[in-house]
Length: 277
Image (cartoon, rainbow, N blue to C red; front, side):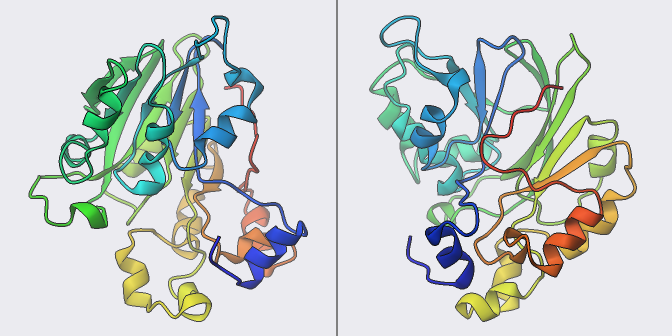
């Protein structure tokens, strides 16, 4: 909303597709849905998704809960908009994030005052609505509002969700500071993997907004130029990039960077993409 870079101008004019904050709704039965992150665009995203239409009761909703990968505002603010869920929601998040949302950014007590929410740590393995969920630590970056919070990490995790009925596996990792130890095993055999595509290059923000390369690295996002060669180690996985920053040239389908990603067989899914795994 406050950027007049070329890519934002193109999106505003409709010459490039606009994208909302990263978010996925998953379901094992087509009735009960869980959100992977809940950002400030959540209201528009829910209303644009027929599967999430309210009902059958006047105040009922198919949304049952959420899995948070981290505590950043872009991934948590949407919970405020979901505060009036009739029966509350079940939310899993890294323990450090749960602590931050209790004190540094007291979202939990605020939404709890509207209904009985169920807050649970995102432990290594758990079950959620018929899906088997695994987590993997992928970062230690604390949100700005929680920089002074002394709590052991991890602060950022990835999720691997398996549907035991179909065997389909989704990996969701929108924030990767590095390609961490064990991550190859974590993604191996996945049907579809949505991973961090925030930046294409390690210095792209320097020309767009004057942010130094060092400051960009501290944001905790592995650039596409570094991750793209690693994807080739898993040719059986269907790969896609998400969490694209407005400075990322892959947003322009006419760019060389877009061609490089697509030529490697990696997808750049638009809002509203539906997957059946």
